[in-house]
Image (cartoon, rainbow, N blue to C red):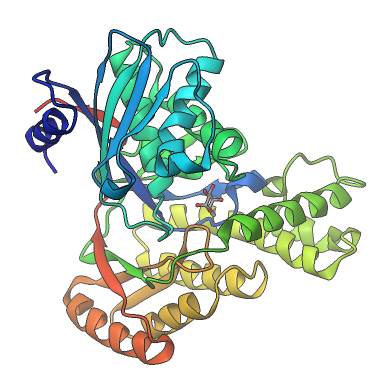
Length: 390
Ligand code: GLA
């Protein structure tokens, strides 16, 4: 989708001659550091070329109208500035409305109604942050239309608040942060405890980031996600009976091993172990990337998958089949599930010359094991949420 096409769609759908402003916010792929963000650890995502495009104008009254080219059957969603509340019937529009509601609650001068159009190409339910991408598209658009001058860093927190408080998914900051703060050619090493971050050049030297979609939607993710989060928080509480820490991400592997018996429930002990070790793996991986040691980076990815499978238990049959098929192929440096889990995507580092064979072989083996046909995308790291002016 380009700017001109968005404008044409907008004029047709809202029957107007006005020229809307056009914005865009990407999805993300997380390279390593999974289920660490809400545990005060590190994540290492990059923003993708997949994203959500948004076009909008202000109105003279207080009507708020939203339309998505992806959900044409749902039609126009209409409400009023005085009635921006969650409603299941509003379906996809709860994401942008959530952002609007946070801005209103924070008393930003959003003083009139608006017509807003959305279109996105982030595969839905695939763990590539389609929801953060529409939240940030809405956030960057409202920021622009109402001249709110909120920095992207802050927009990511507004997006997360919309997700947590309006939509009701208790997610961490990673997805919204990556969508807001992504940079072309860079991955973001984010410390979710302090929100300090570093943009690391993705020097992949003849290696591609291949995203393998299991096409198994992550249906149960909300309840399981919130359950994992509660288990980690309870494990932390028990550790805090002796250790002066605020988050699992503050612990080294050694400190964890010395104190893990404080966690009474063996399942919660496994959850905490994953959070501690995965945080350290993300830090090590970023260092390996800096040193140009992609082999070592790939091994850390494999370890990450095993830990997510055995200790955090968020993979499932399809993700495991995909990762196992990927691990067997020539030219593969590493592969792991990415995102929340329970379906969605595997991310793999594959030597350029092996990518075509990789796709064919993995597709055949994965389909034989699960019955699902996979999709593959080559990822490139792109810029975060922004206005499109040409
Ligand atoms: C989802 C959440 C993120 C993060 C990942 C797991 O994508 O939205 O905040 O917790 O799962 O790493």
